[in-house]
Length: 184
Image (tube, rainbow, N blue to C red; front, side):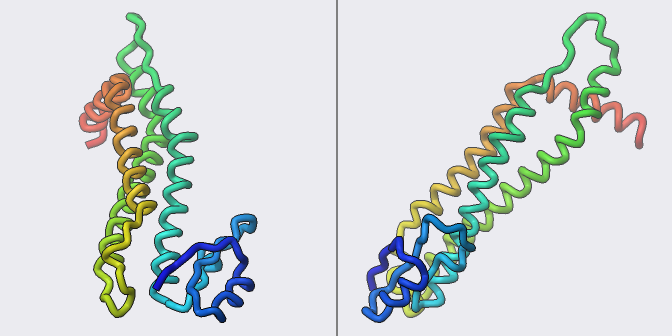
């Protein structure tokens, strides 16, 4: 069974079904939910396409969040390096920065969870029974693998940014030492 993508709308796609050719409708000009973009006789294919498309849309949103919100804030964080700096300055800096770090932690957890989810979806897709979807194990899923690469790149970029900014590490370590002594 051959699949093809068509720019036709969902209503036009139903006319194509009469010709017994399966299709996945992509109406590029309209803002639609992922479920409305798949039009196929096979519910397994519809569900697989919907799931993968939803995950890939979330990866695109995460990539934008990282570029616009998280990476600039990490890159702009600086500690005061003057000699007259009091010992409490790193604590004040980190205390002000702490809400952002908490948000960053949630963001990185979301990236990690999405990575695991996409990996499990790819594994499940390739493990489909031949009767459910013939040739599933031969399908390449390039876009899904690319999405995994993008998520790994986000994790690595975040790690490299923090590694290259000793002020973040130093102030965080000072904050942790202070918190252990004063809060526990």
